[in-house]
Amino acid sequence: MNGTPRPDRRFGHPGRIWPCLLIAVSLALNLWGITYGLPERYYPDEGRMVNHALAFGMGDLNPHYFNYPALGMYLLFALYGAFFTVGRVAGLFQSAADFQLLFFSNPTAFYLIGRAANALAGAGVVALVYKLGKEAFHDRKIGLLSGAIVATLSYFVFYTHFIVTDILQLLFILGGYIFIVRISRNGRTKDYLWAGALTGLGIATKYSPVLLFAPLLLAHVFYLSRASGKIGLSRVALPIALAGLAMSLLFFIGAPYCFIDYTSFLRSLQFRSLLGEVHTFGTGSGSAWLIYPRLLFRHPYLLLGGLDLTGFIFLGGILWAAWKREKEDFLLLAYPLLLYLMMGKWSFGSNRYSLPLVIFLALWGARAIVEAARAIPHLMGSERGKRWAVGLLGGFIALAIALSLLNSAFMSYRLTRKDTRTLAKEWVETNIPPGTAIAVEWDTEATVQLWETPDDIRAKIAAYETGKAVTIHHASEQMAAVHRMRLAAVPRENYRIVRIGGMDGTRVLLDNYSIEELKEKGAEYLIVSDEVRRIFVERQGEKVYPRHNLFYRQVEEELHPVASFRPSPLSSLGPEINIYRL
Figure 1 (cartoon, rainbow, N blue to C red):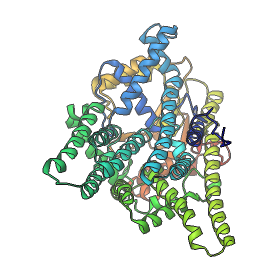
Figure 2 (cartoon, rainbow, N blue to C red):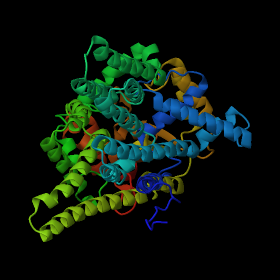
Figure 3 (cartoon, rainbow, N blue to C red):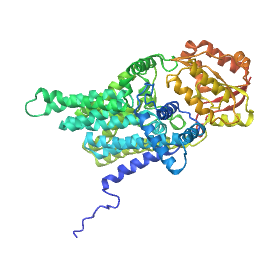
Figure 4 (cartoon, rainbow, N blue to C red):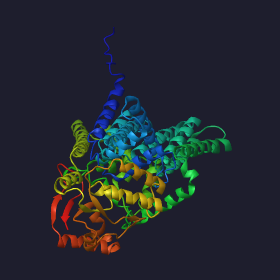
């Protein structure tokens, strides 16, 4: 024994403890509040993902919907297949009909399976941020700090709670970038193949990772510029060709009907381009160039509407990278810059769309902090000045991450509380007798979700069977079959729903947007969600939808709510819900 202390290996290598702790914190934040809203569904994209995944079980693997590609749906379908198999063996399901009945009567288990998978994917994103930070800048501290910034970022944590494609695509973007960085240094064939394959899987999840081919090409140029020996055509073209082949193949495997049903795929791409110009409801105006910079500092997930200090870390990272201008900076810039140039032209912006941008800002911000801390001793003259400078920098970073963690924790806590739509539904079921006709806006995720009567469901079946009703999400025959399954789960006590409005492309229909018309159709109550109302009362909405706007003004002037449910900054989430008696 030479007296040298030995590391405690009970928890593995000492360098692995902090990354594992970081991933554990991320997973805990992602899972806290995972039951939000259930069995109701309040986040719109969740229903699309779950419904398409289950529809594959009807024998048609064509999603018939290409606003985003199908890999996430197929993975969810595989999870549901495993759930059915385990449930069948355990005696939970005696048949496929039992499986269907469970979904239509109480879909909680199906949503929890998808949400848990997304929470795990979110923790995987944090692990890959750590890995990419360490790989790109040769520094484990940069990896840890960037991972901590992402893991505690409240809008990243928010979206890990729901079944959305954005978190899964981040896994493929980050995985692809790790191999792109390696290409710039080593140029190994397997790195080109891995980068291309992960890019292909990313495109099969959400189309924007196709832009990863730009940093891949840049990494190839960097490698060739420092490679020794004669550079022939095969050395220039073959690796990129292999990467492109791997990308195309994995895109096809992950979303085959983008190729098989290419006419529908191309129509969806045109529709998505239209959405970028006019927004979902045709109320978009201007551009989003300034929206994303503002979202770095202020966004909807801040405690009491405060300021997000991590925005200053992101800003410092950009300035530091602009000063350093190293090869890795150009590599890490290529994808987010192209993505920003694409999204900035849209008429709207979102924290959700900003996630791929924020990932790279976190890497730059962490790199700026670590390198600035190392540079301070060489810049400051006195020891006291060095200590003060390092202490102030460390204190600011600790405060920023602590506040970010507090925002995320509080946001996750609010997800454990009852949503305003749930509270409103409970009031309806307590105070309004079954069979009453209730007028409800068409956007079911934005408002109170009530069961229809069997007659209403049969009317929908007939509409789909005769072609009077269509949807961009599923074939009409499939929709008719789904509603026939719903009939078996209809509760005895329910309400006659008078649906207001509806969607035709990017236009909101005028159906039943009249108090007199609602009364003529027998509606006794009207439920108004502020999430829907805002579409028509804001400036651009008033210009595009003057008659819809008039309806809401008449409601406010002529009717008085019998019940109101408002979100609380310290507890419940959801829109303001007002219930009126007609």
